[in-house]
Structures are given as structure tokens and as C-alpha cells.
Amino acid sequence: MIESIKSPVEARLDGRWYVRVGADIFGPYTGAQMLSFVAEGRVQRNSIVALEGAREWTTAAEDAALSPHLREEEPAPQAEAQPAGLVSRKNPRSEEEIESSNFVIIYPQGARSVTRLEQTIMNLGPACKLSPHTWLVSSRETAGAIRNMLTEYFGRNDCLLVVDASRGKAAWFNFGPELEARMRRVWQRGDRASL
Figure 1 (cartoon, rainbow, N blue to C red):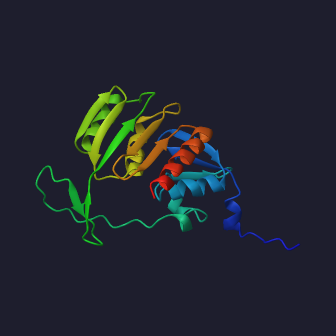
Figure 2 (cartoon, helix red, strand yellow):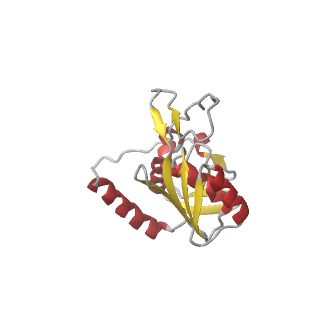
Figure 3 (cartoon, helix red, strand yellow):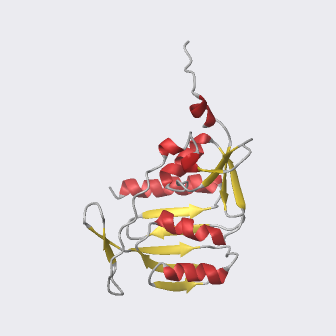
């Protein structure tokens, strides 16, 4: 029986990984989980990561095992003067109109700085607070980008769900591995049903 020999970079993915978001550290995660997080956009180029036993934290883009799996950053579009209330923007590559999406943001266990969290949500675009922990927002951002913006306001025991009702996408934070796996299965079933 011939066994394949893994390169040192491939062998890193067999290790246990940690992700730092603000002052909070999450993990350990397997290499397969980390690649899943990369595919979902939960780990991005600027995410702070460390392999168990590492002496220093690094960005995912600087890690030899993760960087090949990360999407390249798109150049920021040139700012154009637009009238207030405009709800679409042009994609710099295709000049195709991209409209804002409607999002539901739910954080059942609160947040560390509610005032700053709510201000950040209101800065995303037109927003309506539906209950103490539920918002409806129209924004040009993606569900993953909104989740990443808001996670700094949540602690180790808090969770967050961002649903893009317009595009049928979702992003979440800190529900735990078992619940996240169940959520992913349910969401993927919904994706197949809509095809």
C-alpha cells in the first residue's frame, strides 16, 4: 500500500487551529473546519489565526496552509457622488446594477456595547428595530460582511444570526459546532429546494 506524503504546508491542515476575534479566542478547529470557514467567508484574508503551539498570531492571508484557499481581495470601487437614498451600486467589473438586500439581524443574548452595536447596524442603511434583539436592515453589504462587522460587539457566550432575505443567504456567529452543523444542513436543504 502506497501512502502519500504530505508537504509541511499540507500537514499544517492536520493541526488544531484557533481564531481570534477582538479579545475572544475560538477553537480549536480542525483543518477541515477551517477550510469550511474559508469557503463560507467566516475566515477571510484579514482573520487572525494560529495553529496550536504557534508562538504568534498571524492573518489567514499570511498563513501558508490557508492562503491558497482564500479569495483574492477585490479592489475597492471608486467612490462616486450619488444622491441620498440610492439603493443600488454598479459592479466595477461588469457595470451590472446590484441592488441592496434586506437583512434580518438577530442576537438573542445581547451584546457588550448595545449603543455602539445599534449605531453600526443603523450605519449599514435604512434600519428598523423590530424587538430588543431583532433588526430589519436594507444594505449593500453581504451577510458575511455584516456578521464580521458586528462580531466585535459580542462576547464568548453571545451569538448572532444575519439572514439575507433577498439573496437567500445566511451568516452566523458562535452557535457552537453541533448547532452550526445542523443550521448548515437545514440551510443547504433550502438552497436545493429553491433550485
